[in-house]
Image (cartoon, rainbow, N blue to C red; front, side, top):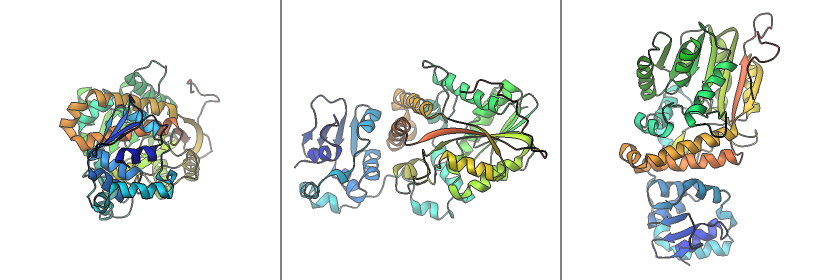
Length: 419
């Protein structure tokens, strides 16, 4: 049995995926629009060391497996593959065909992988220094690289598409404006944006609503880029971005707090402290808009320690269900007033980012290297499938800090057209 046939058995003969391998073997349908090429025994060694998702990811990121064709199409077709579908006899045949050498090779993971030992030296999960390193690992890749992938908005969070034919920039503007309207921002108000990225929400609030906005991020590169963008836009009297942990913000008495894409990094055990901290930053009647990726139910694990996303993309990232998040908000004192799921919007957002990466692929290789570029291609395409198939969701939850008389200071009906 050739290597290509082994891979075909794992994926399934009806997947419409072709295979070719360094031993000269081929399998799968002729003329398929997607082909997996196994280029060296190291690819097999990675799979032997870490069967399944992590081994395949290591082999692809390191260049020992290549994908010819569209990555999203491949991952969509491979969504349900598992070596458990092979019979014991088929597994034994596969071992005999591979031979002992690849199975006995010990090869280190690609350098793009965050080692558990590296994080462990920085303290327990979500300690400040460890959080800073996890954020640095993902967000301090290269501002130029992010400009190519994200486009002019530099918004690395789910957009909101007002129409089927809306551009990414229109959708990101719509997202920031939806957040601003849910928070009922008005001139002269003060906004705290935690995990502010490159300052998109901060600048939108200042420019469009006359709000004095402070953003904080644990990425030094993000903070430097955002501060320059604020000055270039002439918004420095209203907008500011600091390189700072949200837990260290000294000011209080904000009219509104926005958290767009930060909660995923907080951790389940730290959520009570997180929401309590944001609650303490608000004046009575102040609102919090929490926007984050979630699990569809509370039965799934919040973190997959050995998975590709945790090792390569978001170290220590944890996803909870929206039910758990709203419970924690309520337990921290917030009254929850509105919630919506934007799952389909994130799949659409990611498709734009994947197209941007493909359009700038050669430049990206020069800027960040083959391994990092491959991590991004694999991760974003896989996330499209995840959102489309309801493995992950994106929720916005709006809460308010009631005043001493229990008043929310909300109109009887929303003054904006919420979906």
